[in-house]
Amino acid sequence: MGSWNSLVERVRALSSEPRSPHDLGAGQLAFMKGMLDRAVDFRRAHPELEERWFDVNYYDLVEDPMGVIRAIHEHFGWTLEQGAVDAMTDWRFRQAVHRQRETRHRYSLEDYGLTVDEVNAAFARYREFLTSQGIRSLRK
Image (cartoon, rainbow, N blue to C red; front, top):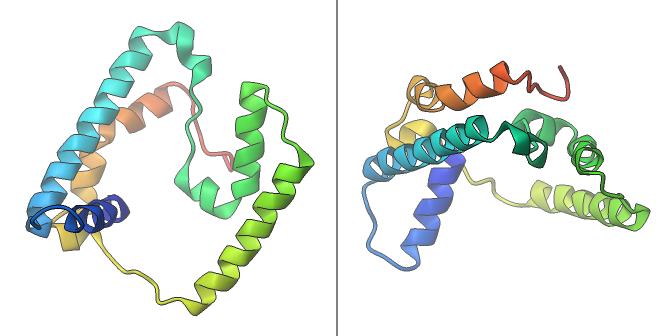
């Protein structure tokens, strides 16, 4: 939520009057909660479509992005071409070099008037749904 709020704040600054960061945080948390709650409702109402979904654990994505990409391709029965793997590996290397030189953008939940407990409570239905479906991190 901190990252999302920071992105929304920056994009909105390009085209509209700024809102207080705390108003933005509360509004975006409500928006994301509603979106995830509707997704859970849809998925529960349509178990026959469950194979169309693939939930990605953020920590898996950071720790092993290529493992996540391979798992996604495997789940959907897609071929992962070596050229694509090479291009992604090259991009990741160039990105790592670039990030060593750049000033890191910093933000926190508190910047937007949010706490970890509030975010966890807002996303509780989605997290419980993932657990009930046996959906776990690739790390298990």
